[in-house]
Length: 353
Image (cartoon, rainbow, N blue to C red):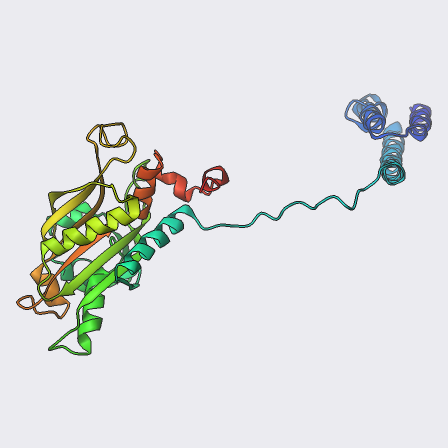
């Protein structure tokens, strides 16, 4: 057996010395130090040897195996260096070729549409007002005419933050809508002059969060843009005129709109605004569910209790508010069937914008 091992080592090293390319080297590795190689078969035959022979054969088999593996590693590096030398000697590099273009990043499609909305509202005299993402139950619900156990709370499944707070009004939540910003803005504007607070015309953009199952039509987080106008003698006609002008600027001068009665706890009366389907031109299609219209926002006159909570006398002041979703508008405009595409980070989708 010892003679056999010496023969295996001699023949393997001789065949290795003649190799000059990587494919032949890989073939040699499999044949000479692979699982089925002669030197490895010696280990499987150890059980048939006598007790005196086993230590000697085992030691010699390990020596041969280590020697072949070392020779293979040295040969592998030599073949690699030889291939590199041939490449440098025969191949040419054209240094005058232009380099690869740098791929620049771009704004996310939701951010693009959000900025477009805010630009249009800015042209119409709205100032951008930002509010916090984490709100108290009081600001998110109670001051907006949604007391504890109100049925309207079921419309918005809420993420509550575990702070150990037992007082219902002080419990912390991830805001379910941007409407708490209405109260904060009105209180900030009225604080300087409580008896004669100034008129308000603001847009409140931001992310909102709802504890919902993620589907093609719903996400746990999405953007909203809230609009608030407060002043003397503000009417529902002002609301319709403002939003109709916004739609024409956003979707084109020939865009048609309609208002439908709805319900929101913080506005009275309340409405939802539709725009004529820009996919089928009002004829009816799968995008508009064959109605010819697409819902784009909710709106209404600010409820007197909300005005009072914000520091504005409802006997003197009136106002209107509206809320829209940039992602929903993109879904409709580009016939996108799954809202999850916006947060999936798939470059094939994002590069289309």
